[in-house]
Amino acid sequence: MGKADAHKLVISGPDRNRSRVAVIIHGKTSRLRGLCHRLREQFEPDFQLQFYLTAHPGHGEELAHQAVLSGQFQLIAIGGDGTVSDVVNGMIRASEALDEDRCCQLRLGIIAKGSGNDFIRNMNRPNTLQALYEDVRHDNHQVVDIGQLQFVRADEISASRYFLNIADVGLGGVVAHRISRLPRWIPSLIKYQFSILRTLLQYKHQAVTIEGKEMVRTGKILALILANGKYFGKGLGIAPFANVQDGKISAVWIGNVSIMEYLRYLPKIRKCQPIHHPELHYFHCETLHITHLDQPLPIDLDGEFIGYTPATIDVFPHHIRVFGTLTDPRRQK
Image: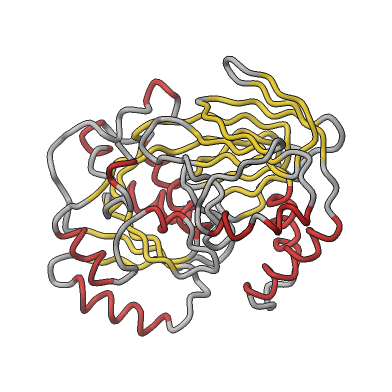
């Protein structure tokens, strides 16, 4: 979907097919049978549920694409941020084949069941089936921005992907890359903690240049955060000025900051408070190009390793409808 089509998910239109709901569940979700039973108890007979289980990374995108093209315009993603990201990408890809009336009916619901669950922290509702059911029944939703990242895959092929929450170039990308290479049988929490510790001990700052419409910056970074939502890394409030409805990406340049300084500021980051440091800069952008000056830097997008720099980010304002209420409505206007 090009920028010229960025408005089409928010145009008002007739309310058809609201009774059909596609439920896309990460295939390794625990107690799956009981979860599906509770979903049916909560939503039926008001809604007709169709369950889809992911079988491999990226499968959620295929399933969401299939569901939308089959006429299911309300989708519930159950899993972590990676599952949510897959569903978002599938919905947007499928929307290219829909007319504007049908595009405006697309809705995303989220039940967080992953290890990070960071985008849902921007929403103000309990992470329960009952709360989600009430939002779906009353069509209580928010229209939020999404980002699009163009990057280079591990096989050196150029690609692009939409994201709902955060892209992280540098430190977070290394962590995500290491997690992706560990055996799948290792529990996610152990993989996450091991990868962070190893990265913090070994990571070297990398030189990059970033170019926006009215700015150019060159230097060594620990990380460059490109945030739509405020949180990443299992509840770290890395982007206190992010706003999912302002039509901009909130960027956080973490420059020549030592690992010990990074750890010292973690309490403030956990509280989503701004940090005052000469090597840390907050700014907003609508588009940004990132070029590595040494070796390509890995990129973490919504908790998943996707590829490397060079990369370009764009924002699509008011692009997708998400069930729920924002955490602080006054700051999201």
